[in-house]
Length: 218
Image (cartoon, rainbow, N blue to C red; front, side, top):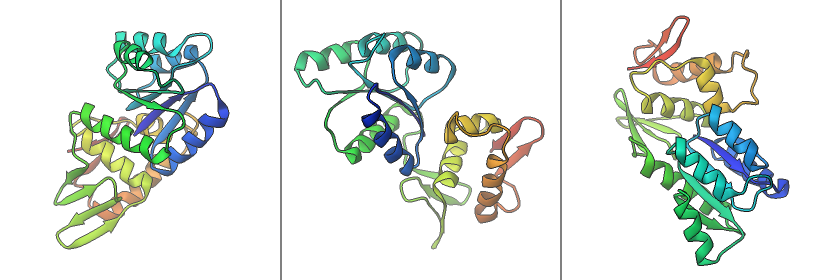
């Protein structure tokens, strides 16, 4: 899942990013409202963590502008705990609210819950061929057999399942799962799909390569 952190304090932003990346999220950062709006205009995110007190363009304004163009889930992250601040955030289009300081595990739980509520495919256990993918445990169960996947393999497979029947380019996979900082000309996607197939789809019956276009899960 791809998350955008909009937070002007690096001392808060960096630990959030590192923690989320350890939990299998692809994370991008913006330190002000203008940068956030620029990223949202060109990138697709599964959830946005939006600080209320931002330089240049405040969080309320950012939320309103995002809502004019997108239904991406937004969690307002702020030190302000007054009721009127929460109401203002919800009226601007945010979906949830967490007050600093907060436990990072709680933040992850809120992100997961919000993404599931907003997704057209809400399950955390997803059917894959004859197997069942548990996205929280990085495991595919095929009968009594369990196949353990890496974080990136799980993220790849989940993205394929949730986008069944649509050709997905390597560039889209890089941006969604690894983030914009990865080398777009690397063989990262090809390498990870190769290892994923070796574990669960060696005959390439489920994840097909569409030459010149990308990959298709049917």
